[in-house]
Length: 463
Image (cartoon, rainbow, N blue to C red):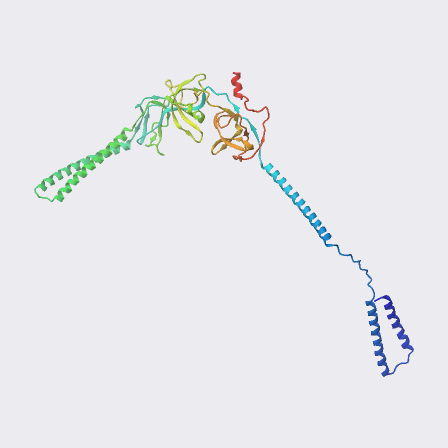
């Protein structure tokens, strides 16, 4: 409704009371008719005002209508927008993928271990092979008592040289003595019973010939005689057993040698046998010749011949070499150590060499074995044996088995498995595996290049 309409309504309302105030008061019948006509007049005015307000323009102005864009232009705009969105999405995806690839390469690069390498040093071939060995008695036997009793006296002490069959000790065996006497008496009883059984068997056999007795009775007496004979044989065996135990009262040397141990004194209780209750009396060793056992590396095994001459040296005899002979070999390589067990016999007529001593065996194997030295911290200890990590093609690790010769402390002599041109890893991690990719740090130019002489070669040249 507009302001003009509101003013008209207000003016009409104010005029009506003024007109009615000066008018004559209607009569009761006339008043009701006048009221109805006034009400109808007001309704007509309100309806006219409402109709007028419908035709009034709205207070808010509408924006001007824009003609629609042509269809081809709209499609081009939509296509450009979609292309922009696709390019933006592709750039975002490419950025994420580039970041992930860079992160993966960085992670892979960090997971590849970095190792330092050195070159093995060439060794000058030795004129002979020197290996450690332990001197042992040619024959060695602990001596136990064969019968139980008390030690009466020993006749040889440690260091005594004895010959085969020489008396070493005497044992008193009162229980065995009494058991032997009892067994002999029981044998006499069996002999008497056998004589009676023989007489009875003969008598009944004669009666059987005259049919005075039955064959069954004659056979029973004959069987009793045979049982007596068997009892006598058992008693004889028991007597001989006890007599042999009596013979063990005297302890004799089983072979010629030197007593290296004595563990009993007179009056000591002696138990028979070498079991838990047994007690060792003496330890006898044959010291001429002596055996020397040594382990020859696999690379030198073909040069070891049975019957070949060799020499043995000991630290307590500087400058002296004892001539020895290769007696026998194991004829097999030990898979755990890759060595050949070899026995060398060295004469010891004057007894200068003592069993149990440590010595060195010199084998004349010539210069047929190529040797190199590697740092001791380059070796890997695996269940399969000693290994070294060698850098192969493509910077991949190769775990190679090696044959170890001598141990110089900081370095090891290797008789096979690597060459001077191989790059070996120092301080390898236990987690290194065969075929694993690594980053190699090249050694300095002044450290162990191929063909560089080793310290031992330099010493050999100086000497």
